[in-house]
Amino acid sequence: MTDSRPDFSIIINDNEAAAARALKSGDYVHAYLLIHALMESLLRIFLEVHENATFHALIERYEQFLKEEGQTELTFVQDLAEFNRRRNRIVHQLWRKGYSFTNRQAEAAASAAVTTYGLFIDWLETFDPNIKAAGFKYDEGV
Image 1: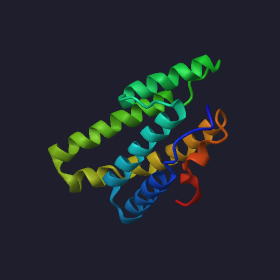
Image 2: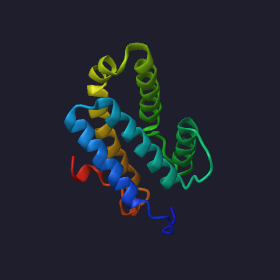
Image 3: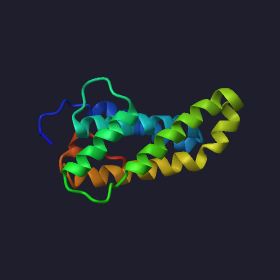
Image 4: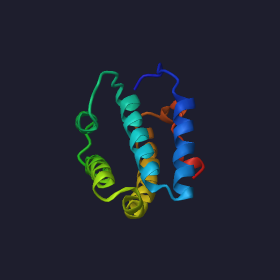
Protein backbone atom coordinates (compact mmCIF):
# COMPACT_ATOMS: atom_id res chain seq x y z
CA MET A 1 0.00 0.00 0.00
CA THR A 2 1.18 3.53 -0.62
CA ASP A 3 2.16 6.14 1.93
CA SER A 4 0.27 9.00 0.27
CA ARG A 5 -3.26 8.85 1.58
CA PRO A 6 -5.68 11.61 2.44
CA ASP A 7 -5.89 12.40 6.14
CA PHE A 8 -9.23 11.11 7.40
CA SER A 9 -7.96 10.61 10.93
CA ILE A 10 -10.19 13.28 12.52
CA ILE A 11 -13.30 11.72 10.95
CA ILE A 12 -12.19 8.20 11.86
CA ASN A 13 -11.42 9.19 15.45
CA ASP A 14 -14.76 10.98 15.76
CA ASN A 15 -16.67 7.96 14.47
CA GLU A 16 -14.72 5.56 16.68
CA ALA A 17 -15.45 7.74 19.71
CA ALA A 18 -19.14 7.93 18.75
CA ALA A 19 -19.27 4.13 18.41
CA ALA A 20 -17.66 3.73 21.84
CA ARG A 21 -20.16 6.15 23.39
CA ALA A 22 -23.08 4.39 21.70
CA LEU A 23 -21.91 0.99 22.91
CA LYS A 24 -21.39 2.28 26.45
CA SER A 25 -24.83 3.92 26.55
CA GLY A 26 -26.61 0.83 25.24
CA ASP A 27 -27.37 2.22 21.78
CA TYR A 28 -26.30 -1.01 20.08
CA VAL A 29 -27.92 -0.33 16.71
CA HIS A 30 -26.07 2.96 16.44
CA ALA A 31 -22.80 1.35 17.55
CA TYR A 32 -23.14 -1.45 15.00
CA LEU A 33 -23.94 0.90 12.14
CA LEU A 34 -21.01 3.16 13.02
CA ILE A 35 -18.65 0.19 13.13
CA HIS A 36 -20.01 -0.96 9.76
CA ALA A 37 -19.26 2.48 8.30
CA LEU A 38 -15.79 2.40 9.85
CA MET A 39 -15.14 -1.07 8.48
CA GLU A 40 -16.15 0.12 5.03
CA SER A 41 -13.82 3.12 5.39
CA LEU A 42 -11.01 0.83 6.51
CA LEU A 43 -11.47 -1.37 3.45
CA ARG A 44 -11.66 1.64 1.12
CA ILE A 45 -8.48 3.19 2.50
CA PHE A 46 -6.57 -0.08 2.67
CA LEU A 47 -7.58 -1.12 -0.86
CA GLU A 48 -7.35 2.46 -2.19
CA VAL A 49 -10.89 2.33 -3.57
CA HIS A 50 -12.04 5.83 -4.40
CA GLU A 51 -14.91 5.06 -6.75
CA ASN A 52 -18.43 4.15 -5.70
CA ALA A 53 -18.44 0.51 -4.59
CA THR A 54 -20.75 -1.56 -2.42
CA PHE A 55 -19.55 -3.22 0.76
CA HIS A 56 -19.93 -6.55 -1.05
CA ALA A 57 -17.69 -5.29 -3.88
CA LEU A 58 -15.11 -4.18 -1.32
CA ILE A 59 -15.13 -7.66 0.23
CA GLU A 60 -14.56 -9.17 -3.22
CA ARG A 61 -11.64 -6.81 -3.83
CA TYR A 62 -10.20 -7.68 -0.43
CA GLU A 63 -10.50 -11.39 -1.25
CA GLN A 64 -8.70 -10.78 -4.55
CA PHE A 65 -5.98 -8.87 -2.68
CA LEU A 66 -5.44 -11.82 -0.34
CA LYS A 67 -5.16 -14.22 -3.27
CA GLU A 68 -2.66 -11.94 -5.00
CA GLU A 69 -0.63 -11.89 -1.78
CA GLY A 70 -0.51 -15.70 -1.88
CA GLN A 71 -2.76 -16.13 1.14
CA THR A 72 -4.37 -19.56 1.15
CA GLU A 73 -6.47 -18.80 4.23
CA LEU A 74 -8.86 -16.02 3.23
CA THR A 75 -8.79 -14.40 6.65
CA PHE A 76 -11.81 -12.24 7.48
CA VAL A 77 -13.58 -12.70 4.11
CA GLN A 78 -16.41 -14.80 5.58
CA ASP A 79 -16.51 -12.60 8.69
CA LEU A 80 -16.91 -9.48 6.55
CA ALA A 81 -19.68 -11.08 4.50
CA GLU A 82 -21.54 -12.12 7.67
CA PHE A 83 -20.91 -8.67 9.16
CA ASN A 84 -22.62 -7.11 6.14
CA ARG A 85 -25.53 -9.58 6.22
CA ARG A 86 -26.05 -8.83 9.91
CA ARG A 87 -26.09 -5.09 9.15
CA ASN A 88 -28.79 -5.71 6.55
CA ARG A 89 -30.80 -7.77 9.05
CA ILE A 90 -30.52 -5.02 11.67
CA VAL A 91 -31.74 -2.39 9.21
CA HIS A 92 -34.67 -4.58 8.14
CA GLN A 93 -35.58 -5.30 11.75
CA LEU A 94 -35.74 -1.57 12.45
CA TRP A 95 -38.77 -1.19 10.24
CA ARG A 96 -40.25 -4.61 11.01
CA LYS A 97 -39.91 -4.73 14.80
CA GLY A 98 -38.94 -1.16 15.77
CA TYR A 99 -35.95 0.35 17.44
CA SER A 100 -36.40 -0.96 21.00
CA PHE A 101 -36.70 -4.62 19.99
CA THR A 102 -33.91 -4.37 17.40
CA ASN A 103 -31.60 -2.58 19.81
CA ARG A 104 -32.01 -5.29 22.47
CA GLN A 105 -31.29 -7.95 19.87
CA ALA A 106 -28.21 -6.11 18.55
CA GLU A 107 -26.22 -6.04 21.80
CA ALA A 108 -24.11 -9.13 21.09
CA ALA A 109 -23.68 -8.15 17.44
CA ALA A 110 -22.41 -4.68 18.39
CA SER A 111 -19.91 -6.08 20.88
CA ALA A 112 -18.68 -8.62 18.34
CA ALA A 113 -18.43 -5.90 15.68
CA VAL A 114 -16.11 -3.86 17.90
CA THR A 115 -13.87 -6.86 18.50
CA THR A 116 -13.82 -7.80 14.82
CA TYR A 117 -13.02 -4.23 13.81
CA GLY A 118 -10.03 -4.09 16.16
CA LEU A 119 -8.75 -7.48 15.02
CA PHE A 120 -9.19 -6.52 11.37
CA ILE A 121 -7.14 -3.35 11.88
CA ASP A 122 -4.36 -5.45 13.44
CA TRP A 123 -4.54 -7.99 10.61
CA LEU A 124 -4.38 -5.34 7.88
CA GLU A 125 -1.39 -3.86 9.64
CA THR A 126 0.56 -7.01 8.69
CA PHE A 127 0.21 -5.90 5.04
CA ASP A 128 0.35 -2.14 5.61
CA PRO A 129 2.27 -1.09 8.73
CA ASN A 130 0.96 2.46 8.29
CA ILE A 131 -2.76 1.62 8.45
CA LYS A 132 -3.03 2.93 12.01
CA ALA A 133 -1.38 6.16 10.86
CA ALA A 134 -4.54 6.70 8.77
CA GLY A 135 -6.39 7.00 12.09
CA PHE A 136 -7.73 3.50 12.75
CA LYS A 137 -7.01 2.83 16.44
CA TYR A 138 -10.15 1.33 17.92
CA ASP A 139 -8.25 -1.10 20.10
CA GLU A 140 -6.73 1.78 22.08
CA GLY A 141 -9.70 3.05 23.97
CA VAL A 142 -12.75 0.91 24.07
